[in-house]
Amino acid sequence: MDPQPGNRGEIRDFLASRRAKITPAQVGLPTSARRRVAGLRREEVAVLAGVSTEWYTRLEKGHIGGVSEGVLDAVARALRLDDDERTYLFDLARSSRPESRTPSRRREVEVPTRVQWLLDSMTMSSAFVRDGRTDVIASNPLARALYAPMFDSATIDKRGRPNIARYIFLDPGAHDFFVDWDAAGTATAALLRAEVGREPRDRALRDLIGELSTLSPEFRSRWAAHDVLIRHDGVKRLQHPDVGQLELTFQHLDLPLSGRAVHNLVIYTAKPGTASEERLKLLASWAATPSRAAEPTRHSPQPGPL
Image (tube, rainbow, N blue to C red; front, top):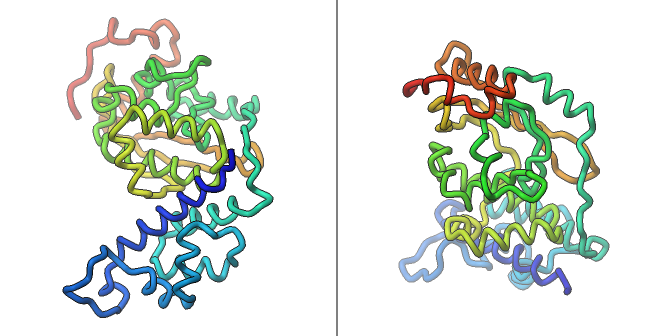
Protein backbone atom coordinates (compact mmCIF):
# COMPACT_ATOMS: atom_id res chain seq x y z
CA MET A 1 0.00 0.00 0.00
CA ASP A 2 1.31 3.46 -0.88
CA PRO A 3 1.83 5.27 2.46
CA GLN A 4 2.05 8.70 0.91
CA PRO A 5 -1.66 9.63 0.83
CA GLY A 6 -1.89 9.07 4.59
CA ASN A 7 1.05 11.38 5.08
CA ARG A 8 -0.60 14.01 2.90
CA GLY A 9 -3.68 13.75 5.07
CA GLU A 10 -1.59 14.46 8.18
CA ILE A 11 -0.11 17.55 6.53
CA ARG A 12 -3.47 18.82 5.26
CA ASP A 13 -5.28 18.39 8.56
CA PHE A 14 -2.43 19.83 10.62
CA LEU A 15 -2.02 22.99 8.54
CA ALA A 16 -5.78 23.52 8.29
CA SER A 17 -6.19 23.11 12.06
CA ARG A 18 -3.42 25.64 12.79
CA ARG A 19 -4.87 28.08 10.24
CA ALA A 20 -8.28 27.84 11.90
CA LYS A 21 -6.81 28.89 15.26
CA ILE A 22 -5.57 32.30 14.09
CA THR A 23 -7.90 35.27 13.75
CA PRO A 24 -7.27 38.05 11.20
CA ALA A 25 -6.98 40.54 14.07
CA GLN A 26 -4.09 38.57 15.55
CA VAL A 27 -2.01 39.10 12.41
CA GLY A 28 -3.15 42.62 11.62
CA LEU A 29 -5.58 41.78 8.82
CA PRO A 30 -8.99 43.44 8.41
CA THR A 31 -12.06 41.57 9.65
CA SER A 32 -15.54 41.41 8.21
CA ALA A 33 -18.93 40.40 9.55
CA ARG A 34 -19.47 38.43 6.33
CA ARG A 35 -16.51 36.17 7.02
CA ARG A 36 -17.55 32.51 6.69
CA VAL A 37 -14.43 30.63 7.78
CA ALA A 38 -12.88 30.10 11.19
CA GLY A 39 -9.44 31.63 11.39
CA LEU A 40 -7.43 32.61 8.34
CA ARG A 41 -8.15 31.90 4.71
CA ARG A 42 -5.53 30.12 2.63
CA GLU A 43 -4.83 33.26 0.61
CA GLU A 44 -4.19 35.20 3.83
CA VAL A 45 -1.65 32.66 5.01
CA ALA A 46 -0.02 32.84 1.58
CA VAL A 47 0.33 36.62 1.86
CA LEU A 48 1.80 36.36 5.36
CA ALA A 49 4.27 33.68 4.22
CA GLY A 50 5.25 35.55 1.04
CA VAL A 51 4.13 32.84 -1.40
CA SER A 52 1.36 32.56 -3.97
CA THR A 53 -2.10 31.31 -3.03
CA GLU A 54 -1.75 28.48 -5.54
CA TRP A 55 1.54 27.44 -4.03
CA TYR A 56 0.21 27.47 -0.43
CA THR A 57 -2.94 25.60 -1.48
CA ARG A 58 -0.76 22.87 -2.99
CA LEU A 59 1.31 22.77 0.20
CA GLU A 60 -1.78 22.41 2.38
CA LYS A 61 -2.92 19.52 0.20
CA GLY A 62 0.19 17.66 1.31
CA HIS A 63 2.71 18.33 -1.47
CA ILE A 64 5.51 19.18 0.92
CA GLY A 65 8.40 16.82 0.16
CA GLY A 66 10.44 19.17 -2.05
CA VAL A 67 9.73 22.39 -0.15
CA SER A 68 12.79 24.29 1.08
CA GLU A 69 13.44 24.89 4.76
CA GLY A 70 13.24 28.65 4.20
CA VAL A 71 9.70 28.41 2.83
CA LEU A 72 8.63 26.02 5.57
CA ASP A 73 10.02 28.44 8.12
CA ALA A 74 8.01 31.28 6.56
CA VAL A 75 4.83 29.19 6.73
CA ALA A 76 5.59 28.28 10.35
CA ARG A 77 5.93 31.97 11.22
CA ALA A 78 2.75 32.87 9.34
CA LEU A 79 0.81 30.22 11.26
CA ARG A 80 2.49 31.18 14.54
CA LEU A 81 3.63 27.62 15.21
CA ASP A 82 5.35 26.97 18.51
CA ASP A 83 8.66 25.10 18.64
CA ASP A 84 7.06 21.65 18.86
CA GLU A 85 4.63 22.37 16.02
CA ARG A 86 7.44 23.74 13.86
CA THR A 87 9.51 20.60 14.47
CA TYR A 88 6.48 18.47 13.59
CA LEU A 89 6.00 20.36 10.29
CA PHE A 90 9.66 19.83 9.37
CA ASP A 91 9.40 16.15 10.33
CA LEU A 92 6.39 15.76 8.04
CA ALA A 93 8.35 17.36 5.21
CA ARG A 94 11.36 15.10 5.79
CA SER A 95 9.25 11.95 5.85
CA SER A 96 7.53 12.99 2.58
CA ARG A 97 10.74 12.95 0.56
CA PRO A 98 11.05 10.07 -1.93
CA GLU A 99 13.96 8.47 -0.11
CA SER A 100 11.88 8.32 3.09
CA ARG A 101 8.82 6.58 1.67
CA THR A 102 9.76 2.94 2.28
CA PRO A 103 7.36 1.30 4.76
CA SER A 104 9.15 0.38 7.94
CA ARG A 105 8.85 -2.10 10.75
CA ARG A 106 11.11 -0.63 13.37
CA ARG A 107 13.43 -3.08 15.05
CA GLU A 108 12.90 -3.32 18.78
CA VAL A 109 15.75 -1.71 20.69
CA GLU A 110 17.35 -3.65 23.50
CA VAL A 111 18.08 -1.52 26.55
CA PRO A 112 21.81 -1.73 27.35
CA THR A 113 22.70 -3.25 30.70
CA ARG A 114 24.37 0.01 31.72
CA VAL A 115 21.03 1.84 31.34
CA GLN A 116 19.27 -0.70 33.57
CA TRP A 117 22.04 -0.22 36.12
CA LEU A 118 21.40 3.51 35.97
CA LEU A 119 17.69 3.01 36.57
CA ASP A 120 18.24 0.62 39.45
CA SER A 121 20.69 2.99 41.14
CA MET A 122 17.97 5.65 41.44
CA THR A 123 16.39 4.27 44.60
CA MET A 124 14.52 7.41 45.67
CA SER A 125 13.21 8.39 42.24
CA SER A 126 10.81 6.53 39.98
CA ALA A 127 12.57 6.12 36.64
CA PHE A 128 11.68 4.38 33.40
CA VAL A 129 12.57 4.47 29.70
CA ARG A 130 9.81 4.92 27.14
CA ASP A 131 9.92 4.99 23.37
CA GLY A 132 8.03 7.26 20.98
CA ARG A 133 5.04 4.91 20.97
CA THR A 134 4.88 5.32 24.79
CA ASP A 135 5.96 1.71 25.39
CA VAL A 136 7.73 1.40 28.74
CA ILE A 137 10.78 -0.65 27.77
CA ALA A 138 12.75 -0.50 31.04
CA SER A 139 12.03 0.60 34.61
CA ASN A 140 13.34 0.55 38.16
CA PRO A 141 11.55 -1.07 41.11
CA LEU A 142 10.12 2.24 42.35
CA ALA A 143 8.63 2.98 38.92
CA ARG A 144 6.92 -0.40 38.97
CA ALA A 145 5.60 0.30 42.47
CA LEU A 146 4.48 3.83 41.62
CA TYR A 147 2.79 2.78 38.39
CA ALA A 148 1.55 -0.55 39.76
CA PRO A 149 -1.97 -0.03 38.31
CA MET A 150 -0.46 0.31 34.82
CA PHE A 151 1.96 -2.62 35.21
CA ASP A 152 -0.93 -4.76 36.49
CA SER A 153 -3.36 -3.58 33.80
CA ALA A 154 -4.96 -5.88 31.26
CA THR A 155 -3.66 -3.46 28.60
CA ILE A 156 -0.05 -4.66 28.83
CA ASP A 157 1.30 -6.67 25.89
CA LYS A 158 2.21 -10.35 25.80
CA ARG A 159 5.71 -9.57 27.03
CA GLY A 160 4.36 -7.77 30.09
CA ARG A 161 5.35 -4.41 28.66
CA PRO A 162 3.03 -1.51 29.52
CA ASN A 163 2.06 1.15 27.02
CA ILE A 164 1.17 4.49 28.59
CA ALA A 165 -1.30 5.54 25.91
CA ARG A 166 -3.10 2.19 25.92
CA TYR A 167 -3.40 2.33 29.73
CA ILE A 168 -4.67 5.91 29.81
CA PHE A 169 -7.31 5.47 27.13
CA LEU A 170 -8.34 1.82 27.44
CA ASP A 171 -8.20 1.05 31.18
CA PRO A 172 -11.10 2.65 33.10
CA GLY A 173 -8.97 2.62 36.25
CA ALA A 174 -6.66 5.24 34.72
CA HIS A 175 -9.31 7.89 35.40
CA ASP A 176 -8.90 7.23 39.12
CA PHE A 177 -5.11 6.87 39.04
CA PHE A 178 -4.43 10.16 37.21
CA VAL A 179 -5.97 12.98 39.26
CA ASP A 180 -5.69 15.24 36.18
CA TRP A 181 -6.70 12.55 33.70
CA ASP A 182 -7.83 15.04 31.06
CA ALA A 183 -4.40 16.73 30.99
CA ALA A 184 -2.65 13.34 30.91
CA GLY A 185 -4.81 12.18 28.00
CA THR A 186 -4.30 15.36 26.02
CA ALA A 187 -0.52 15.28 26.49
CA THR A 188 -0.28 11.60 25.58
CA ALA A 189 -2.23 12.02 22.34
CA ALA A 190 -0.03 15.01 21.46
CA LEU A 191 3.14 12.96 22.10
CA LEU A 192 1.87 10.26 19.73
CA ARG A 193 1.04 12.93 17.13
CA ALA A 194 4.66 14.13 17.25
CA GLU A 195 5.87 10.55 16.80
CA VAL A 196 3.70 10.18 13.69
CA GLY A 197 5.52 13.19 12.24
CA ARG A 198 8.87 11.50 12.85
CA GLU A 199 7.85 7.98 11.83
CA PRO A 200 4.68 8.13 9.69
CA ARG A 201 5.21 4.64 8.32
CA ASP A 202 5.93 2.85 11.58
CA ARG A 203 3.43 0.00 11.37
CA ALA A 204 3.31 -0.68 15.12
CA LEU A 205 2.60 3.00 15.75
CA ARG A 206 -0.16 3.01 13.13
CA ASP A 207 -1.65 -0.13 14.69
CA LEU A 208 -1.64 1.50 18.12
CA ILE A 209 -3.34 4.65 16.87
CA GLY A 210 -5.89 2.56 14.99
CA GLU A 211 -6.64 0.56 18.13
CA LEU A 212 -7.03 3.67 20.28
CA SER A 213 -9.16 5.43 17.66
CA THR A 214 -11.46 2.42 17.38
CA LEU A 215 -11.89 1.76 21.09
CA SER A 216 -11.68 5.19 22.74
CA PRO A 217 -13.90 8.18 21.86
CA GLU A 218 -11.76 10.22 24.27
CA PHE A 219 -8.68 9.46 22.20
CA ARG A 220 -10.47 10.19 18.91
CA SER A 221 -11.48 13.67 20.05
CA ARG A 222 -7.94 14.52 21.13
CA TRP A 223 -6.39 13.03 18.01
CA ALA A 224 -8.64 15.17 15.84
CA ALA A 225 -7.28 18.33 17.51
CA HIS A 226 -3.84 17.74 15.86
CA ASP A 227 -2.03 19.08 18.91
CA VAL A 228 1.70 18.27 19.08
CA LEU A 229 3.97 17.78 22.08
CA ILE A 230 7.61 16.75 21.89
CA ARG A 231 8.78 17.40 25.44
CA HIS A 232 6.60 16.81 28.47
CA ASP A 233 7.79 17.96 31.90
CA GLY A 234 5.94 19.32 34.91
CA VAL A 235 3.94 18.20 37.92
CA LYS A 236 1.69 15.16 38.03
CA ARG A 237 -0.79 14.16 40.70
CA LEU A 238 -1.49 10.46 41.15
CA GLN A 239 -4.01 8.68 43.36
CA HIS A 240 -2.04 5.61 44.31
CA PRO A 241 -4.15 2.68 45.58
CA ASP A 242 -1.72 1.94 48.43
CA VAL A 243 -0.31 5.26 49.66
CA GLY A 244 -2.92 7.81 48.60
CA GLN A 245 -2.37 10.99 46.64
CA LEU A 246 1.08 11.96 45.39
CA GLU A 247 2.17 15.22 43.83
CA LEU A 248 5.37 14.59 41.90
CA THR A 249 7.69 16.52 39.61
CA PHE A 250 8.55 14.67 36.43
CA GLN A 251 11.31 15.31 33.91
CA HIS A 252 11.97 13.79 30.48
CA LEU A 253 15.59 13.42 29.38
CA ASP A 254 16.62 12.38 25.88
CA LEU A 255 18.26 8.97 25.86
CA PRO A 256 20.01 8.19 22.54
CA LEU A 257 19.76 4.42 22.15
CA SER A 258 19.25 3.93 18.42
CA GLY A 259 19.71 6.43 15.58
CA ARG A 260 16.76 8.77 15.15
CA ALA A 261 14.35 6.68 17.25
CA VAL A 262 13.03 8.53 20.26
CA HIS A 263 13.70 7.23 23.75
CA ASN A 264 13.18 9.22 26.92
CA LEU A 265 14.34 8.66 30.46
CA VAL A 266 11.40 9.76 32.62
CA ILE A 267 12.10 10.56 36.27
CA TYR A 268 9.55 11.26 39.01
CA THR A 269 10.63 12.92 42.25
CA ALA A 270 8.88 14.57 45.20
CA LYS A 271 9.53 17.96 46.74
CA PRO A 272 11.63 17.52 49.90
CA GLY A 273 9.77 17.82 53.17
CA THR A 274 6.32 17.13 51.74
CA ALA A 275 3.80 14.39 52.43
CA SER A 276 4.40 13.19 48.88
CA GLU A 277 8.07 12.64 49.68
CA GLU A 278 7.15 10.51 52.68
CA ARG A 279 4.72 8.47 50.63
CA LEU A 280 7.26 8.00 47.85
CA LYS A 281 9.77 6.81 50.47
CA LEU A 282 7.18 4.34 51.70
CA LEU A 283 6.72 2.99 48.18
CA ALA A 284 10.50 2.81 47.79
CA SER A 285 10.83 0.72 50.96
CA TRP A 286 8.15 -1.68 49.71
CA ALA A 287 9.79 -1.82 46.27
CA ALA A 288 13.10 -2.78 47.89
CA THR A 289 11.41 -5.75 49.63
CA PRO A 290 9.86 -8.11 47.06
CA SER A 291 7.44 -9.75 49.50
CA ARG A 292 6.18 -6.35 50.63
CA ALA A 293 6.11 -4.83 47.13
CA ALA A 294 3.59 -7.41 46.00
CA GLU A 295 0.79 -6.51 48.43
CA PRO A 296 1.83 -3.62 50.70
CA THR A 297 -1.70 -2.81 51.89
CA ARG A 298 -1.93 -6.11 53.78
CA HIS A 299 0.74 -4.90 56.19
CA SER A 300 0.37 -1.15 56.42
CA PRO A 301 -2.53 1.27 56.81
CA GLN A 302 -3.20 3.65 53.92
CA PRO A 303 -2.16 7.24 54.67
CA GLY A 304 -4.78 9.94 54.64
CA PRO A 305 -5.08 12.70 52.00
CA LEU A 306 -2.36 15.26 51.43
